[in-house]
Length: 113
Image (cartoon, rainbow, N blue to C red):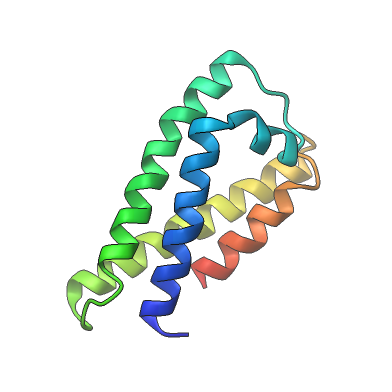
């Protein structure tokens, strides 16, 4: 898959997560099988801004030529995605997150790869 295609997909996914965590934070908690609370929604809304930043970064770098900067962007997103996938699996196997977390884990592993 080309860098441009992967960056575009990552940007769209990150933007969807941004919008969901900002406007409907309880939806993702429900999908992941995790109990929500006012504190969790607060953190989720703050997290949404990070997803918005990732969306902007990947969208505007999608046409970047092969360079050290593009490699740094790719490496940081890949490490972030694999770390999130690992954390999702950890929380699933310890019984905290429900089966819905596996949707996120699969997506994160695909983007990380």
